[in-house]
Length: 405
Image (cartoon, rainbow, N blue to C red; front, top):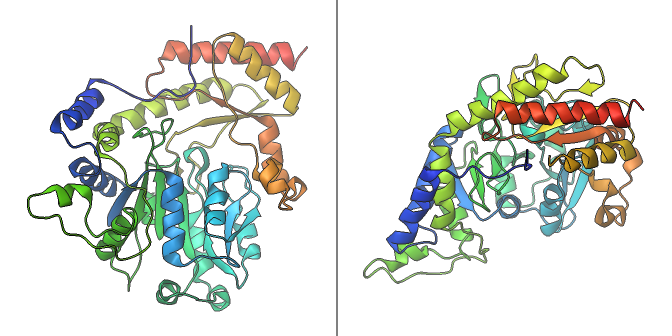
């Protein structure tokens, strides 16, 4: 039985939607992108959403809009994919890394201690689809003494008057806290539609705007669209209409727009996302029901006492007491049974780029411990119960063979 790690969900509806784009003669940014933006904004309950070509592009654009530059700081978790910190670096700013909690999300108390007069944004990560403690983060950035520390250096920063709360929601479409979507709890949330995500457009990202007054999210979404097209006032679809060729370049933007042919994949999936999410929950629950019987299994958080609900993007199992060598042997054992697993993630301070900049893994003990013990099991709607049981059967055999020998 062959179990890939995370294949995209492609059914006849997806294929038909893509074919519709291909047959229309219009494959770059156009009507399907707009429909996808509307579907996602409605689903996550944010005023406006803007589609771009990747999470990274969306995060960079949001930070550029804020005016983040060299000398500024943005707080990020040490336990995440490199793109979280690199988006900050691409703006010339410095990522300030803090450690994580037991649920693999950013340690809010450490966030507060890390804030300085140079802090312009906090960029927490909903790792595996588990939402961060946004209610506490909102409280922190609203505290009078924290707001006094904030040094506004752009018109946007002056209007905001505080640190921006920008969520790395790459994993968390559908994640909720006390009944509210992540995008409802932050200023801006950026989703990923990469090939392995819950919803995919092959490559892509969505900027979800939820800025408070005096910002106008409708006007702001137009700015983001313009900036995603090299600062051009009209997209190619609009320009292609009879007599509508004229355009202007009003700012130095980026070329990061999402094509319609990509949006078509995600659009079809969004229309059945309640079903896809329920199937992810089924697989997640089946893993948990079995592994909860073993005291060596540190299970990922499902629902916690503070009302959080995962998007069931990943199943990051941690195995108590194992070494990195044992973890890697378990992964190899599973691979020999045709089961693909993964590790999420190598902490940033262990990566050469960040080590060379002086980040030290010894300052992030929980991130390092999570990495040492973590194996991500396959999780996607297409997995049958029989396949899940095959994964579990071989995981238990691997533990017995490698750890209990």
